[in-house]
Image (cartoon, rainbow, N blue to C red; front, side, top):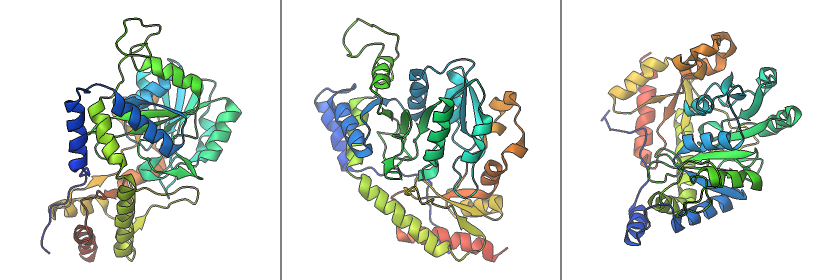
Length: 368
C-alpha cells in the first residue's frame, strides 16, 4: 500500500479570500468596518437571528454571552462533560462554577435526562453544546430552562449550518455562539466568533460590552464599562468569501461522510455516530467508535494519516479536580474519549484519500 500524507485539518482557501484581504488593505479598512457589517448581516440572514455581534474568537463569544447575562461568582452553569475546554473555562473565568452532565453514547450530545437533577438554587444557565455538527435535543432543554427560570447559552461553535427542527442552532436559546476558527465549517482568517440573539435588550448590552463601553468607535465618551472584542474587516472579508462557498463546503463534507460510511459500514469494529431525526448533520468531524483505539491511531499515523481522538472529559481535567467529580457519573464521556476518533473530512479529502484512509483502517483490523 503506497503511503499518502493526509492531514486532519486543511482550511478551504482560494483566490476569493486573498482578493477580500487585498480589498480591505487597498481601502484602508483594517479594523472593524463595512465588511464586518456585511458579514453580520449575511450570518443573520442565514441563521434567521435578529441580532448579532462579532467577537475575536468562539471562546470570547461564549465569555461575552455569559457576561451579558450577568452570570457571576457563586453562580452555576450546567454544561456537557464532553466538549472543548473553552465551554467550561469561560464559566470559570466569569467567576461561576461549571456543572458537568454526561452525554448519550449514540450521538455524544448532552444527555438531557440528566440535566434536571444537577440544578440547584445557584444554577443560572444551561449551556448545551451542539457537538460535531449535530444539534443537541433543544425542546426538553428549553422546557427545563422555563421551569427553573434559567437562561440558555447555546455553544454552536461546531454547528454552523445545523438546524434543529428547521430552526438554526444558536437561535433557540437566549444567546448562541459561533466559532470561525481555522478548522470550522467556515473561517474568518483562522480566528473569529459571533454571538447571535433574538433579544433586543441583550443585543444592546453586547453592543456596549464588546466595544469599550460605547456604541460607536472613534468617540471618547464611554457610557458603560466594556472591553475590545471586535473583529477586523480583513477577517470579516475573509469570512464573506467563505460564506459564498458554504453550501459547497457542506455538500462536499456530506459526500465525504457518505463515502466513509459506504467503505467502512461492513466493519464490525467500526460504528458511526447516530444522527437524530430532529437535526441535520454538517460534518464538522466524522466520528467513529472503534475497537482498540490506541493501536488503531498509532497504525494510522505510521501510514501517513494524521489522527485525532475525541475530547478528554472535562471532569477529569486537572484544573477541575476541585469540583470532586467521580468517573462513575460520566461513563459515556469516558467511553467516547477511550473508544472514538475523528476521520479527516476537510475539502482536501478527495476520493483517493478517503479510500486510502479506509484501506488503512481495514488493514489494521485484518491483522487483529
